[in-house]
Image (tube, rainbow, N blue to C red; front, side, top):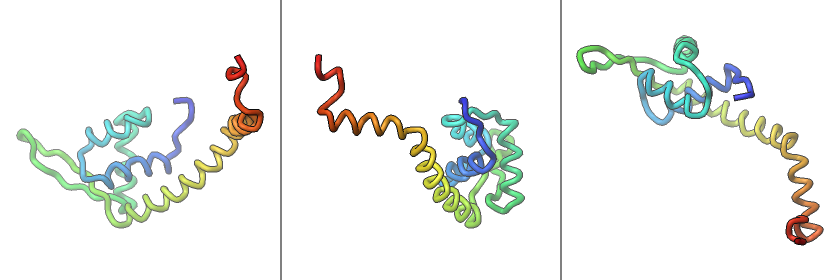
Length: 121
């Protein structure tokens, strides 16, 4: 991905995954990797920070003779996620306005002129 991912956006992605249900580190990493190029070594410090900030908690469950550490979003994490969603909506709208402004102008002009040049052929 060309665009750098800031810590707040990464936090929001992690909290959004956990808002769908508790999960353990590997699955969480795979879910986040579906949309963001990130390694496990990058994600675990994020999880520790979110835990320190009381946005998530952990618990262990036995699996095949060893424990898996599960992560669970807290109410503080849900509150933070809601704030991130609100901020993201506003931020995305601003970025879309700048990045897509020319595309929207071209589409409006084509609509007023009755179609694109391809329609004339």
